[in-house]
Every structure is written in structure tokens, then in C-alpha cells.
Image 1 (cartoon, rainbow, N blue to C red):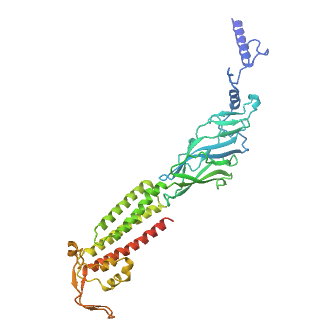
Image 2: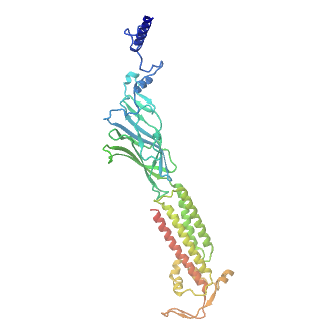
Image 3: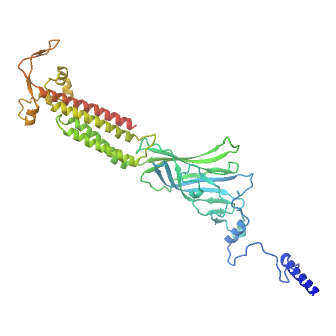
Length: 445
């Protein structure tokens, strides 16, 4: 019984030994060595065989070269569309990021694989440089680079062109809005590797604008690329980055019709109020309507432009200044109406009346008021008869005895004050015309 058990143990041991270590007769007795390679597919292609051979024991998290060697990454950008968000101070660029580098672990002899010189790999199958947009406004993930396949050549060169939407922070200057030009930057660099491990260089034709889709608001007027190497106080290694500079100019034909044309109308309405008759109450109504129009545009600006701490748009300053100007114009109109409608009991001082009836009056275009005599005019209305008052002048003599007014001469008292009110209107017109011209010159520079 004991000898039978011993024989069974010996037989089991011999069988296990031959299974594990093989048979010296080359498997003639039915035992073969263990296979460590994947089982071949019955219809495997050269691509399948090549990928199996290349990815066997491949570590996609390790840089595919010796630690003392440098991996050179070339970067370029093909821009499709550009858009600026003024409220967030960001620029959104739809583009294709063109990256290329050499992987020493992904090289093969094309003749061993049916002349296969390149093959596609998914982005998660092989190592990729951690090139990041430094001034990204969309978080810290690398997800802004699309998950497209990489093209690997037999020489180990890898080309990766992921489509992406880059959202970068941009320092906007809206002072000349809506005729502004903005300069935005896209800064790329490796996030964890220094310049002694990954060297980022500018690819040929780094910025390609041939695919740009016409935008309704922005034009790319200039672009360039710069590569810089920086040393920080914390580390001895250099850090490399590549910066794409985009100069964007806003298309503004629509804004000329929406904003500039109303500004011209506002100026004309304000100045037209000074040419209305001094007694016309429509002066106040006209100025009130003008101030409402300006206020509406100020509300419109709050919807289109962010409330920035600096770089206030000049067009906003112009409209706000115009609102102040119209308010003061309304005060002048109220004063003119009061002077022309109030029944005055005192004479207009001769020092004021003399220039108005002389050269100054002709310059201001007051001849009509100077020649008009309300007492003998055939067009005197009931309101004018009520508003006008005629008194007798006594004989007056100035200090130099050059001006003598005879007694008994009838002088329209109210008419003199209307002449004075009309002169205020004319002077205000000239002043405001110059003021608007200065504002337009200052805010258009």
C-alpha cells in the first residue's frame, strides 16, 4: 500500500516537471513550453503584428528615451475661429494644435512588416508630452486637447493634430470700443518637464491662417510666435515656453450705424434748440427728449460693455459728457424763456443793449430782432400784446455825453429783453458747437 502511494507521487512529480520545464525530446511526448506572447490571430494583419510588438512592455507614462536625452517637441497652430468675451476678459480660439516628437521605443523596420511605414495609435496608447496652455481660463485639465489618434512613422516620429477650443485669459483694452484692437497671447509649455527633458520648438509655419472662417466681428490683422527660455530662482533647470501672439481688430460697420449716427443726431438736436425763438417752450421739450435718448444709450452700453476699473471706452465718456451738456443746455433754455416771457419793469442796461444793436448783434445774427418794432408790427398777436409792455424813456445822458435819448421816444421794453435772450441763445450755440467739436476731437484720438 505504501509502495503504491510512493509510485503515484513519483508519477505526478514527473508529469509536473515536464509541463513546467518541457520535454528534452522537443515535445515528442505531447508537452510543450509555456507561451508568453499573445496568441496569434488567425487573420492578423501587419498592423496588428506591429502594434503588438511595439506595445509589448511599453510604458506610456515614461518618457520614451534615456533620462539624459532631450525630447524635442515641435508645436504649431492652425486657427479656425476667434471670439472675444469682453465680460470675462477671455479669447476663445478654435484651432488645430500641431504637435510632433520622436519616440525611440516606437521604431521598426518597415520591410519586416510588409512595407508598413506608418500606423495610427490612439492618444491613450502611447506617451504624449504634457503641453499645456499656461494662461488657460478653462481649468487645469489637459482635456482642451481633443482625443484624436496619433500617426507614428517607422522612424519613431509622431504627429498629433488634435482639434481643440482654447480659452485663454486676455488683458482687454476697451478704451477705443467699438473701434478697438486687442492683443491676446496663447502661451504653451510643458507642465512637469523642464527644458533639459522636453525642449519645445516652433514648427515650420507655426501659425496657419488659411483655415480661418470669416468672423462677423473680429479680424486677425497680425500674428507671430516667440520661444523663450526662463530660469527661476527656485530651480537651476531652464523652462521653455512658446507664445503665440494674435492681434485682433474689431469690425465696426454696424456700430457706426448704431452708435455714431445717433451721436451726430444728439449733437444736432442740442444745437437746434438754440435757434428756436426765445419764447418757445419747445426748447425744454427738445432738450428733455435728447437727454432721454442719451440715457437709453447709456443703458445699452451697460449691456454691451463690462464695468471695468480702467480703460473706460471713449464713446461712453462722450455720451456721458453729452448728457451733462444737454442738462446745462436745458438750464440755459429755462433762463432764456424766463427772460423773454416775464414782464419786466426795468430797462435793459445800456451797456448790454448797445453791443447787441451794433456789430456784435450783426455777428450773432440779431438783425431781425433789432429791426422789429412790436408796437407798429401788423403781426402782433394777443399773447405778444399781453407780454410786451411799452414805457416812455426819460432823457438820459452818459458820463461822456455821447449818448442822448430824447424824451418822449417810445422804446419797447419787453423787446429789449427778448433781444438779450436771443443773444444768449446765439452765444450758447457758438459755445456748444465748439464744445462738441472739442469733445469729438478728444474722444476720437
